[in-house]
Length: 166
Image 1 (tube, rainbow, N blue to C red):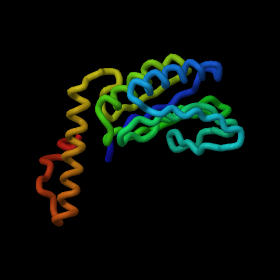
Image 2 (cartoon, rainbow, N blue to C red):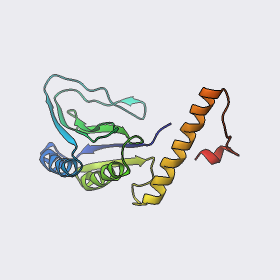
Image 3 (spheres, one colour):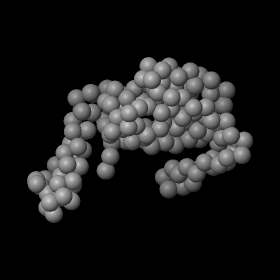
């Protein structure tokens, strides 16, 4: 259970890394986020895509962007195959940060041969702030129900049908 943005793709060329860094830095600076450069000749990064381990053998190159408060890092880290995959939970950060991550993904999409985004907040492709807020509120209500059930042995309210949780 969570509100996350999942994305993966293959960078067209490593020559696009400076342009990618520029976009991340601009969005990061606007949100007072920290940008960390990754250039590791020895490290390996275990990444899975559709249950298959991606070839992210060294050297690793890319970036990590850390939004605050309460947001998981946004990774753009590539192995020799120029592929990357990231899941970033945003349910505990601001709505502005969730929207900013979607905007930076939209801006960087052209740097990739293929680029797939699954935004559990529904903001990707729609820019619908009302829907993003509604999904976040439904998630918060579901979490409150679970917390209530754990604290009192039973939930305070039950959904009328499975689809009421969606």
